[in-house]
Image (cartoon, rainbow, N blue to C red):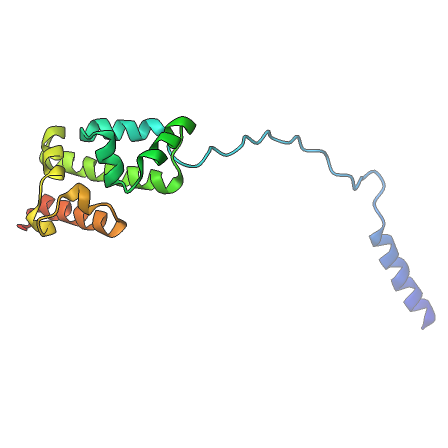
Length: 151
């Protein structure tokens, strides 16, 4: 009986050893150069482009976005908006794009976004869109108008 156990352990020992001609070393894989992630937030030029497209003064747009003039001056100096500020700019740009699509032109879209609307209880869409909830309401109103629902 003792010989049977010795044979099994000897076989187990052989399987644990490396086979001749094989190496356990792994080949070195060249590392890819990883570029740093882009800085968060939009470039300040996107803010300026939105301001021109909406035909608003710097003060009007900063007030409607809920920002101060000092903040905008800092962002202009650094060249970037924060992620939150970028979100507001993108939201206004999306509303402008939807209005341009619906009304067929930039001038008509501007006019609608700057005028009081019955579907918003007499509020001006750009003023109403200061908050995320307000922006969704403006988007819903544009969608309703797009589908021909009288508001």
